[in-house]
Length: 203
Image (cartoon, rainbow, N blue to C red; front, side):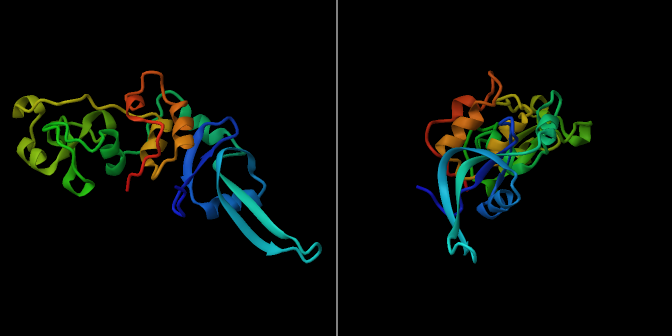
C-alpha cells in the first residue's frame, strides 16, 4: 500500500544509494533538472500549475528510486574506511531491536546504547564497541565489560557500510527499494538474512 509518508530513495548517477528524501524534495530535484533516471514503481503523481502558453497542466511522476547528478558524495561514502554516523535508532535497528544480553525484543523507548568496553575503561563510542541493550541489562552490567559482569554477548557489534546505513535509516521501505539496497550490501552483510521481499514498516 502506498502512503503519503513513503520516502523516495535518492542515488547518485552510478546507482550508489545516498539518502531518503520526501516527495517535495524530489520535485525540487526534477525542477532543477538534476534527476538523470528513475527506477522502481511510481509512488506519486504530482500536479502543478497550468501553462499560460499551452493551457496544459504540469505533471511529475515520482518513482520510488531516483538517480541524480553528482558522484563525489557517493564516492566518499562508498570508500573503504568510511564510517556512518552513530545514532541510537540506527543502532537498535542494526541489532533488530534485540537486547544483545538477554535476547528479548523491545521498543525503542525501552532500549539503550551499551558500550561493550565501558567509557570508564577507555572504551570508545563507536559502532564496533556499542550494542543494543534493554535498560535493565544495561543497569545490571553498569561500568563493567560483559566478562566482568558475567553477561554473555549474543552477537559481535559491527560497523555498517553506507548502503546498510541508508537501509537502517529508512522508514516503510518498499520491496523495490529493499531489493535495490540489498544489491549494494557487502556479500557477507549480516543484514542480508533479515531482509525479505516484503515492505518493511518500522516506525
